[in-house]
Length: 183
Image 1 (cartoon, one colour):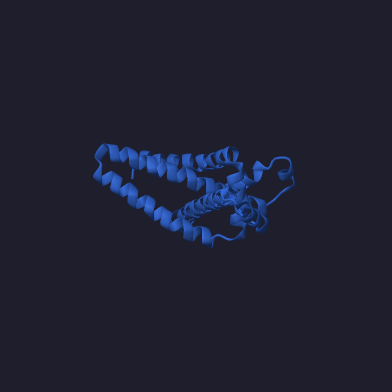
Image 2 (cartoon, rainbow, N blue to C red):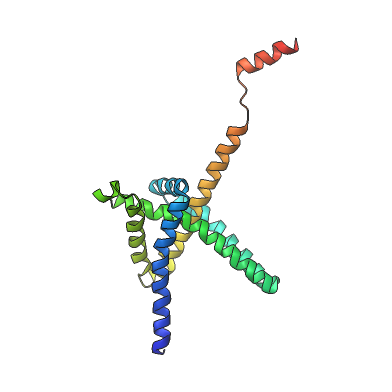
């Protein structure tokens, strides 16, 4: 391996390690309610989020593979778009995960700057990503799958609240009044 190859790999990894906390802070700034809900859900447990995110991740991989192989150049552009959308929603959930980690490592400075918990949790998670085998092949993919699951559970709960909020609720007095009007 040449020195140029080594340096290119090093700088790609360094760039990713610098970009992840920025992406997580961006998600926290753009969608604070979603990240707060994801952080609360991650504080309660991670297994359900992992189990929800796993089929979604597998579906994304299958759809992207089909797009790449079947539709030619247009499919490749669409596949990259699918991956980008998936990563954006997954990292919104990962932003909640790192915020949850940061809350568990609280300092008095968090009262003045609440975003510091996201940054601190992000640095901790990124340091775990750097572990040679465990970080690369277990922690990094698991955190993205958990992030996808957390984000989708948040979407499902919002949809459930929206559906139940729009349905009229019949009470006994409404039913009795409706019966009297028809008499």
